[in-house]
Length: 260
Image 1 (cartoon, helix red, strand yellow):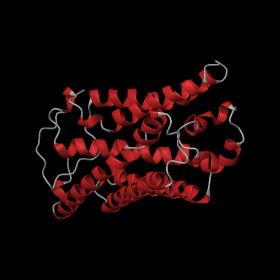
Image 2 (tube, helix red, strand yellow):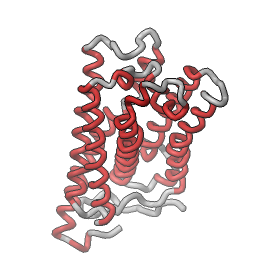
Image 3 (tube, one colour):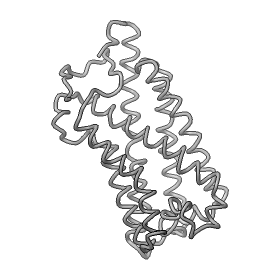
């Protein structure tokens, strides 16, 4: 079914999540569903299937990059069922898609690497380690070297994911009226921005020692484009959080405004 929300943005009204939209839900299923399915499918193609692993890694990178951008920014697309949505509703849908995707990435792929990084480095030809090796091959060899300063980036990312998940739980349980949840999610946006610039900056200052600069694909897509949503979306999180805080403060003074 399509959304019937027609009211304008009002600072005292709080949207308790995302209004229903069949079109948006379909885009999310395609984008994030393909993201989840990609790793087991391409692992099977690379190992039992015998397909060239470098080629598979490149195709996987393209699919994951498209899935991130399409899934995260879907609510900004001209989807018919979103025509009556307010700008804030679209922004909130983008933010929720980004933070949910981001926190799950921190607490699955990155946490898995942090726990198993030694075993992963010693298993370049093992199917179970391919979800990480697909990125190490040409993308960023720092995941192979696992130096302390780089590992600390991943530790902070995982902590950030835990903080963000706590904020999301507070927001959903309170129907988006708990300002503590908003502040926690906003704080993760700051950490995302700092860590991402550190991730890029240290590699740039080192002369791209860990990236295959001879390949425009490895540098431009695997290293830069794949991670770029974490340079863009955190600013949207901060803009959303500021507007939501205004609504929460106003709603606290006018409980009748806490409605759809």
